[in-house]
Figure 1 (cartoon, rainbow, N blue to C red):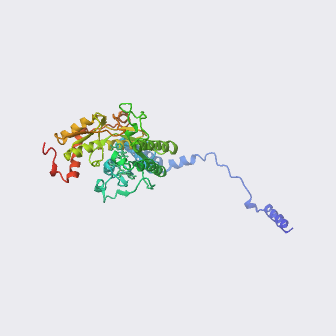
Figure 2: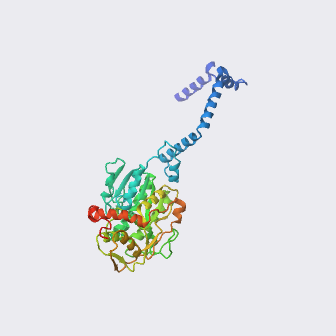
Figure 3: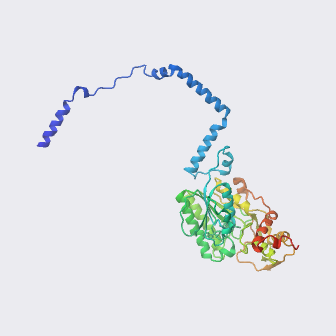
Length: 426
Ligand SMILES: NC(=O)c1ccc[n+]([C@@H]2O[C@H](COP(=O)([O-])OP(=O)(O)OC[C@H]3O[C@@H](n4cnc5c(N)ncnc54)[C@H](O)[C@@H]3O)[C@@H](O)[C@H]2O)c1
């Protein structure tokens, strides 16, 4: 009863609003209202100042035609780096386009296996370029000595970590190299090798997905197995033994490629795949069972060079600086791959032994041993895809690259250059 009363009371109040608060429609604007800005512009020579400003700006841009495009490109580049570092770009071409006075924005890069042979050379190039580099390595085959020259540089970090365990790092790019590469090492613990290839690659792809980094896998020519096509093109699916002693590596890398493509298709991770063919150069493990390091170490120690089988199986040999250039071009390119990265110059084992003899010791002897299981007979990359799309091809011939490697091996085997200089007792 009380409530009804108060409601009636309120309705009564609304009905008796004072005259001043009653609704009145907005007065219509006079028809010539639009003339007011024109009038404003015409007063006090304002129009003259506007015109003078326009003339000055036109003269400036006529004299400096690059200014506008340079600024536009710089801001686009900044946006790309900070916000979406995932859009495909041809970085090498872009670097050339950066206007004078504007520096390339450094990247934060992880190199797994960066203390190893290829990884350490890649780290050198990235550091040289001004990037911040984190090396992740468990030192199974890698050595601190390979990257020690960067210690103390604030842009460099070295983490002892096994890629089989997950890791979280804020980075822009991931070069995933961690994996023993020579038969001696990958056969040492085959289960660990395949775990590194599968679980390690999964972990690094997971990281790439999480932080939006671009991911490059270093696969291998071994994915072609004992090839039935020669030379090998990227489209060739290979001829691989899934249960052999090399399978932990060959099939491990094939699975790593599969995972990489699945993360690309399924999770939109930006990926790159390089299929690396035999590479040689300074910092290779001595006595790692790879043919070039074996021959060089044996010839330097005056031991016979071991040739497996009849020595007629062929390989191509790429100098490490060529490979690193290819990897960096691939990472900066807009292409996923896979790309063969190798030197198409083909040598039989016997021909290689001859080059080593010519470089180190013409009296060096060759000893024939029984061939290992699943050793491929022929390996030669077809690099036309990398040539066409990355503008890449190897530059260093075997006869130029080998002496550089020999010098490094000599120093590591004998301690210094003087103890056994090249061709001392030729
Ligand atoms: N060198 C070649 O001729 C060649 C050919 C084909 C493919 N590749 C590939 O290139 C990459 C580098 O090869 P490389 O010749 O420098 O070999 P490498 O053995 O010198 O380097 C491999 C590096 O990975 C590290 N590593 C291994 N397992 C790891 C793990 N579980 N966690 C963290 N780090 C680990 C090692 O300690 C080492 O530093 C490898 O993935 C290899 O398969 C190399």
